[in-house]
Image (cartoon, rainbow, N blue to C red; front, top):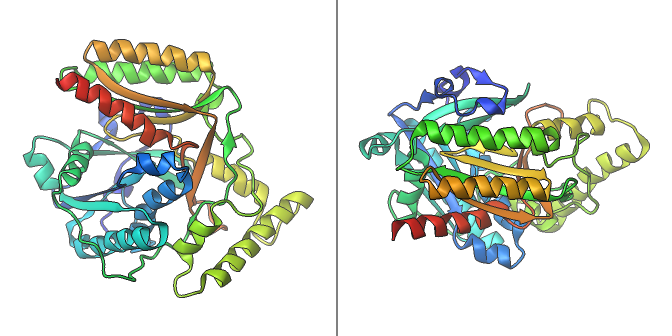
Length: 385
């Protein structure tokens, strides 16, 4: 995956600029869009399996990343799934990684993961585009933003049974090294955790939707501390025992027994907990600095063919945003779905605890993105009648 496409996109650092068209670059036609999501994630979330759903969703990014640690590629985490783009030359490797994730999810986590690889040229032929921007959240991490409708088209094609990736043979496991979920859930500090999805409607104009996004972001900037960042300023809280221990064991044990891998993870988590307790550091590892980087590297806001946020804000702010979005939906500018909960959860990809490129994916603690999508789908279905 040595194509430098993503690295050559000029980065922006103010999220309010996410709707500026000149920040986006068109994805090359000889690339592929990978999409995956958990089947019946709503049912799994209603059963309380929040960590499991989020970890399976993030496993797709981890497996593709581990194909070549030195290569960067655009991707986005969606709570119960993910999307990414790679050159067509990496088709077989990407397909194997996705197939391994599917088999691992089924046999280890008891969840069904569907996946597809869609040629960008097919997306273009369908009248959609895939444009990519690069949002630099910290010196070590930049996240991809997608526009043009192409990712949504690829996702719909997957759910229709097109471009599917076949399940790997029994016992196959992907390389999920670095996939972790050890932080304690983050309780709302300002009122509630809002998970929000806002998508443009075909009957509205692109400029109208851009203005709507700007309005929502301005409200959060004005009414919410740190634009609604759900992670505390000094970072999340270490947990003991490690959160999601069983899931991480299944993801990272490789050929090791579950018991030996669990002991290793407990040992790894013990070190930062003790260091933080006594205000110490170990060689290059400073737990306080690492927590600060974790806060900076969190993807609590994104643009994936529409606005997606998981934010901590006042109940009144949520009500104000909901009224504005209801008006926009009635006017034909956008569809939206939102879900309120009392906490947020984090799933992480950590190449190394000693570098600043660790990534942290946030979702509502009750499965906010997936449950917001239920409301969103109902609005779309009602409008189509």
